[in-house]
Amino acid sequence: MSYIKPTDVVNGMVAAGAAKAGAGTGQLLIRGVLGGAILACATTLALNASVQMNGIVAAIVFPLGFVMIVLLGLELVTGSFALIPLAVHRKQASMGDLARNFAVVITGHLIGCIGYATAYAAVVTRMGTSDADPMIQMLVNLAEAKTVAYAGLGASGMLLVFLKAVLCNWMVTLGVVMAMTSTSTGGKIAAMWLPVTCFFGQGFEHAVVNMFVIPAGMMLGADVSIGDWWLWNQGPVLLGNFAGGLLMTGVGLYLAHRTAPSGKSGRAERESLDQELRSLTSSSQDI
Image (cartoon, rainbow, N blue to C red; front, side, top):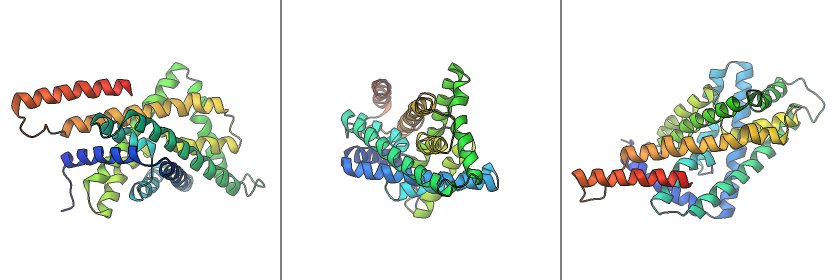
């Protein structure tokens, strides 16, 4: 009884994108900080599960941070990559709104993730007095695997990290949208959990997770520079996450379930949808 039809979900996606684009700068910054910190916290829990058990358990544990962010109405820029461009397309938000949202929320994520990384590094090293915690070496290895390991592959490494980011945010944005398919809290949680588990379990690249993992690894001794972080991971991952969210979820679901305005049918409806497809393609290139 709590199931929501895909066509209504698409309308909800547009409305959610418009609401996010129109939110106040202060609100966006706070939501971004909280979203980044919560996801960072969930990441360490998942990594701990991986150390203690195995990667599949880590994938099952990780979505709890994502669920908390969505249910509390906080910000996760990777989810907005699928929503706000649709609101811009439907003229319920402007490109300026889109740019402001992305810039402020990414800034908030960086503050939240690096703040949590600083505190967590102090905890696992017992205020710099011990290197016995296995999480220390795990974070160091992850930071290097997510940066200099790609650099070692050259152009192929850059393409690889971009593709992993595209596939990651396909799943993450599906989690955001699937939360709209139910009106019950339990239904939302179950719907979100599935695709997020799928991305984490396969080692795809998520920009906000990496805003914690890589700086934390650097603080703990990883041989990674700020340039390595942004050139070989953060920059291409943000671009790949954007492409995956926009094209594979935002545009894909919108075109799959969009309904023509009332009174249009047959050939007129097909022409309307074809025109909208051309418009969306053009908008995607502009963004």
